[in-house]
Image 1 (cartoon, helix red, strand yellow):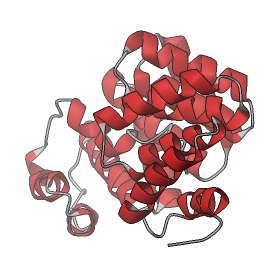
Image 2 (cartoon, rainbow, N blue to C red):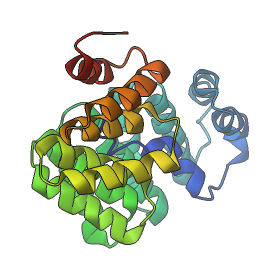
Image 3 (cartoon, rainbow, N blue to C red):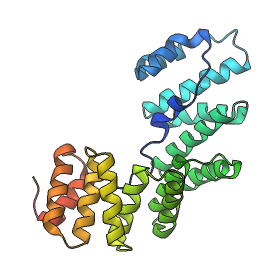
Length: 246
């Protein structure tokens, strides 16, 4: 889809925090950092925890939760991430795990649970572009378009170059007809930041279509479809604008 409110969510989160690594799980962490998720998971699951203290068990739960998230085994991920959240010993790690929980709840359509986690984070004062982008995405899923735009505005107040917020807000403003000209400006800026993003190219093409510039719309949507030929939303937009498929 063209709205990418959680595009930068837990996929990158763990890399932004300097993590301690217990020597007993070093090999699993090495594999994890190499993005060898399956191998890392096997290593963590085979770890002998009989002499682990409480902190070591929480560290292992943290990595198990992230591995399961990467592998899209969301129900398994939830149980481990909850262990980390309830431990409450590492504020940054709890923040990251709450964000990951919210991410899982959003993409599994448990929106109220996602909002609960996100509002807990907001109340704690640990605000970030990712937090507002995810809240905005959850609002968009519930068709709360004006509220979603307001939340993307908050992202841009914190990070004026946040391409995810620019693209997503631009798409909403165009798709709903709230502000077509601003939508075009935002979508152009997002494409300038990530010219090979099919989602961003799609948003720009759709904004041109909504503005009545059909030839421009075709150009950008064709580029998006060339990059992501199996993306259903892009195919739908392209068919609407051109009346055919590639």
